[in-house]
Length: 160
Ligand SMILES: [Zn+2]
Image: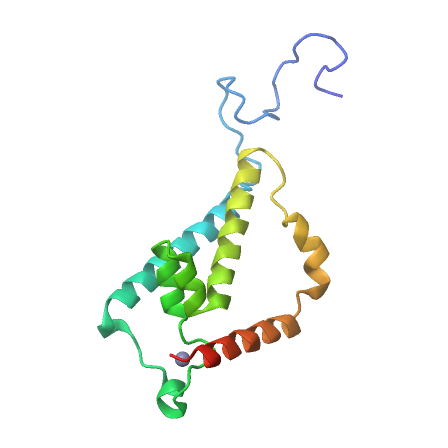
């Protein structure tokens, strides 16, 4: 009620409650930066994809898979670097072919980061994705293990 909403005239902007309004006042410093977390996630993901691409391009940087060397079959993580490198190059189908779980996780992280940044730019809360509230009861370590095993089965059947 301090904003003079009942007076019928434009209220004076004293408290800086509308940052970025172009009034010429200094930007408000006391508020949080809702874009920081999703932007940091996007930057982290971009760095991860760039590193994967760099590693995939240089055989000297690639560590041999010990599990694959001993057993002769891919481990649950085999293909993850290649998947992220393919994503970095925009080869979506290749990424999901190399390691579906890594590709899906990276895509989900990218969507989450973009969602958060877009919401922050629109001045809306950057909370969880709407679907996450419904999925939360199912997002357990059992689901993660099941996805990892399903992904590993895919890798074993595909061979490498
Ligand atoms: Zn491996």
